[in-house]
Amino acid sequence: VSVDVQRGEFMGVIGPNGAGKTTLLRTISGVIDPTSGSVLVNGQDVTALPSRESSRLVAVVPQETNLAFDFDVREIVEMGRTPYQKRVRLQGETDSEIVDQALERTQIADLADRDIGEVSGGERQRVAIAATLSKDADLYLLDEPSAHLDVEQRVRATTAIRRYAENHDATVMVIDHAIY
View 1 (cartoon, helix red, strand yellow):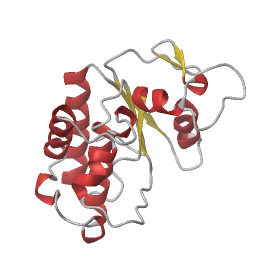
View 2 (view 1 turned 60 degrees about the horizontal axis):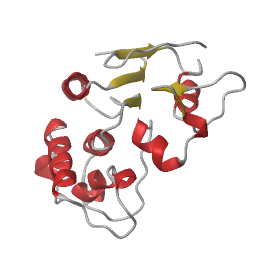
View 3 (view 1 turned 45 degrees about the vertical axis):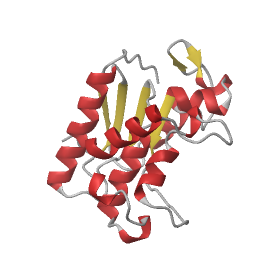
View 4 (view 1 turned 135 degrees about the vertical axis):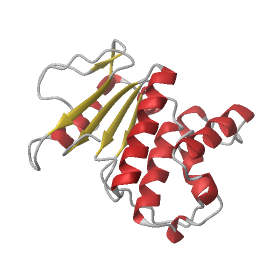
């Protein structure tokens, strides 16, 4: 596969189950090494970067998000800022603003203090999207981000992601069965 996506573009990869969409996403994100060639994001080989650097460059919303610990929604969205934090450093004002914006964009600010175990599957998916947007990356890879969302929420989530990309000059690649 050869793909050239320009900064600020919103790209959809559409196909049936088993077509290799998720494998493509995992290769672009650096989780899987390409069998040949390379994956360059802003001229940098993603597979050669340390984890912290690649996490600042590429953010991923996986198909399934399993959270086995009791965190509240805000804490999970704050975890998206991890690549920018030192091990023992508390979040700064900028980080808090970015987290608040991500909560607002995904329309889950009212859930911020709720335990993740108490939210629905669709709300959990929006939490995953908010945590990913809080990374402030250059490339966002979303693997079926509208899973578990009703039609209205699918449109809202996709619109929020598009607007975010436009306002932050970020590139977005959405893997799905259809684009809304």
